[in-house]
Image (cartoon, one colour):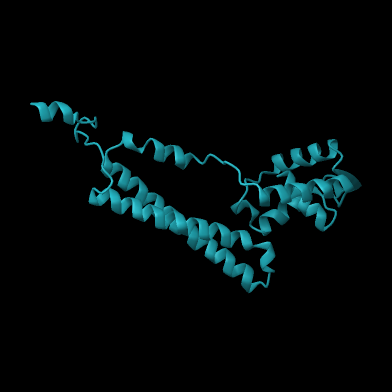
Length: 197
């Protein structure tokens, strides 16, 4: 959120409500959790850190006062440093799905296949949404530098679907071995006991 606020103020001075509306109009909520309270908290924190500063306060009619903020020199430097770091340094983001894959062996193979098929369907729906968003940006003649991340997320999602379809095929064919589960108790069947008897 801090980077988004700094980036907006890089464009021009504005007040937090204007920032919030602009983020929504640009569909930033598709990629980042944006809540007004978090945004106002971030503005206060950036002000305390002297990365932004209040420029003016005005009131229109019966509306509450609105303080307009501008980015400071330290804010420009912090934004550039953070963007540069994000672009060059791969980070372990610990997605929950990786934990699910690590523990998938605790489910019967049919449940794993069903869950993975649902994931594929969800990702494909997301790819369709991203495609529509990309097409809207292109039709609105928004320069690609502002929405190239949509292409990145689409490519990443498409690659995941390809990988998942391969995994599903391995599970369905038995190429990827799976422990048998009792269909009634949903517990693993001890194949050693059965082979000795």
